[in-house]
Amino acid sequence: MLLAIDSSSVTASAALVRDGATVAEAFLSNGLTHSHTLAPMIDMVLKNAAASPEEVTQVVVTNGPGSFTGLRIGVATALGFANALGIPCAGVSSLMAAAYGALDFDGTVCAAMDARRGQLYCAVFQVQNSHLSRVTPDQAPARESFLNQPPPPVLWVGDAAAQCVREGDHIAARPYVSGYGAALCFLNGHGRPADKIVYLRAPQAERERLANAKPARPAT
Image (cartoon, rainbow, N blue to C red; front, side):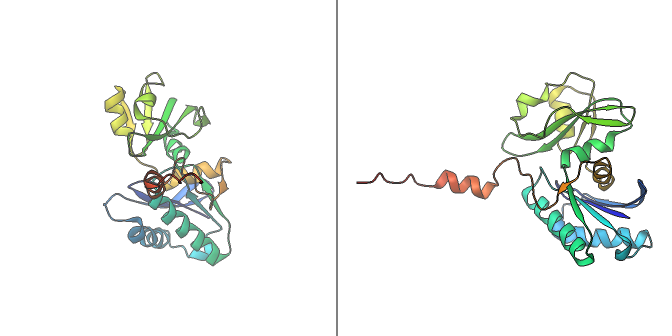
């Protein structure tokens, strides 16, 4: 049985998946930090499935792009769970996991997450007959430069989906990443090392450090 975790944005999700089907899933968007909600959520899906931790044979976690703090909490939780049980842990793209929640839609799927400072984390995918293929890599462009790139109709997914629909004059949005989407991403061969978090841009603390750094004095 596979345990899939997402905490890459303002929401959090955990799912138990067996033979490609969801056994139990939980989702939260309550404003609390993932450090308070993620572990109890995992415990809840195990109890709802009447399953013990020892029945989990694989852990999957979204490991970027997304919220710097959320990603670190999710990856640390997933690795801790996997290490305690001696089972493998894999990472998947947060954007592709969001897109895998739209396999019932035929057409262009744009995954978009708020990267702050006028940027998006985004990627374009194509879905045809429940098969998803990647069109662009995960990227972090300026918001305006990406919104109207794909011609409508477009299904937007991710935590910036609703805003992209309004600003880009598109028609449909699904705003969240699901644990089941992360599981499908892995089961379709898109796993990667869990501990290699993909930030796409430097964390805010690093950007501030570089901005405040004084230029070195020339040698005399």
